[in-house]
Image (cartoon, rainbow, N blue to C red):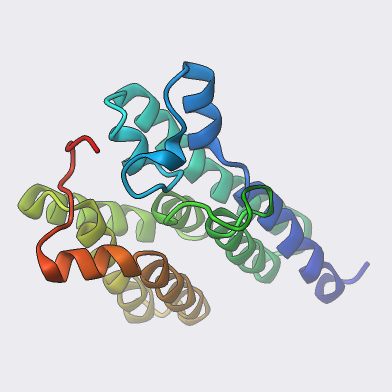
Length: 198
């Protein structure tokens, strides 16, 4: 199989990794209420935090990030950087729209970080620093993600990583779409802050 012919396979590999709902799995194993019935209904770490289980939220963040990294690293090892980027896109879409959960998944922040970690780790560090700085200032997880994802493609472009910047723009647009309800709540002043329970 040629490298170009492997690209659809890379996408499927990424999608399958990304669609693993770690937040839902971990909270079910811990015996908490159905994650989809609280807060935003998302399966990501921020919503897990609303259960009051910080350890579960941290584990969700870690595993969601690592599934993005794993998809990128595996595809890249098999067929190079183009396959890695395609797998990253697949992982992101898999997390947002998992077939197992009727295409209703998470918001994609941790997976975004994991994809960056596998493709160009300094960008992942920049994303995390931007997220942390915004979160410490505003205590809005959603706003932190929006700010970090908006600036990260500019960082990649500035340092000459044009293909990665293009991928990051696509991921950012998808992340903004996933946060569309959060954006409305931010505009109306009704968005929950970090640490608030549902």
